[in-house]
Structure formats: C-alpha cells, structure tokens
Length: 125
Image 1 (cartoon, rainbow, N blue to C red):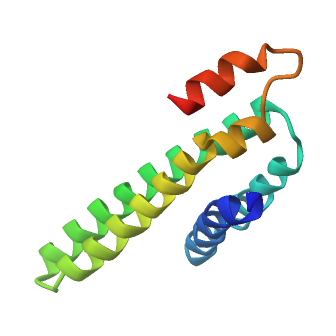
Image 2: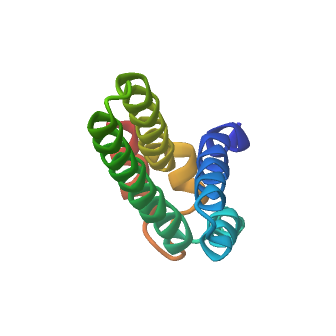
Image 3: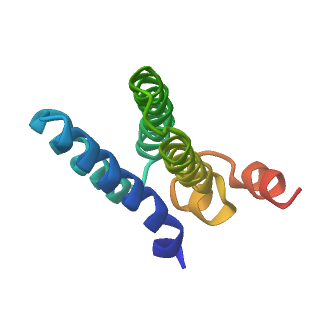
C-alpha cells in the first residue's frame, strides 16, 4: 500500500525529468530523477525535501504554462489545450506532494524519538 502512495510522486519526477531533458538541461534532469531516491531514507527530513521539490516543480509547471501561453497568444496559435494540460500536470504534482501527508506515509517518515501518540491523534482527527 505504501508504494501505491509513492507512485504519483515518482511519476511527477519522471515528468519533470522529461521536461528538463526537453529543454536540454541534463543536470536538472538527473537531479529530478535522483530526488525520489531520498524516499528510501526513512526520515522526516527526506520526505520534507521531496515534498518541497514537488511544490517547486508544480510552480515550474505553472511558470512554463504561463510562458508558453503568452508565446502562443502572441503568435496567434491555440493555447487553451496546452494550458489545461500543464495545469493538470501542476495539480498532479501538488497532489503527489500532498500524498506525503497521509497517515501511512507520516508514520513511515516520522521523527525518530518523537512522541508518536501526538502524530496518531493528529492523523485520526
């Protein structure tokens, strides 16, 4: 079940890697594809770093959509379908970041030595 909650994040990073590859940035592509490896570290900070990168990735998708829509409008080309697709990719990426807040993944990436009863109470509320 845990892997099913992580699959959207993995797909988000593959899409981000493809985006950077399309723009010719091998370094950013490699970073995007390597970031999910942090999820193998079962520490709270690893999950938070991955989550923060997903938030930034969603902003990148929105920025890209904004730039491309402007370019297409200036050229008189259709832009709405592209904007909807990139908006959906941004929402997918945000959703995959939010999945890291599910009770199962919060337990997996909890702080060591922290009072887990507070975490369980917060997740059941």
